[in-house]
Amino acid sequence: MKFSRQREAIKEFMMTRKDHPTADTVYTHMREEFPNISLGTVYRNLQLLTDIGELQKVRVGDGLDHFDADTSLHYHFYCRQCGAVIDMDMDSITEINDIASKTFDGYIESHSLTFSGLCGRCVIRS
Image (tube, rainbow, N blue to C red):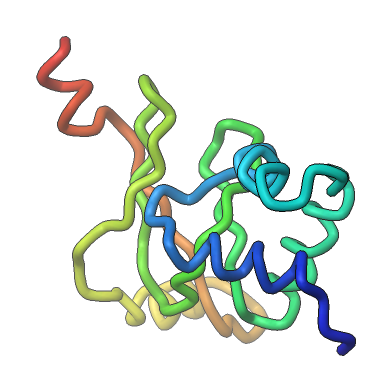
């Protein structure tokens, strides 16, 4: 794969984030360093970084793709009020693959799991 300053900048930016930004958020930040970068370039590079395992795409129910530089098996929480996507601090439950396999005619390799509700800040505001 050919080196790209823009792709490297996107990857570096993502490594600093814990909030699972969308492509629009990444685009807004990248325009500060690369004023002529297009949204399409950001989308293509986020997808490429996802395809090669440098990022993971997180879908939480808001219709947007969020991106995460932590590619380890972990779970997310989506706040239905403020839209925050938060990493869950919990052990992975890999046994869920075995449970699901009992009623599925195929081979399950992985799973993703997202919890939803109200985050701590939204609970306090309610």
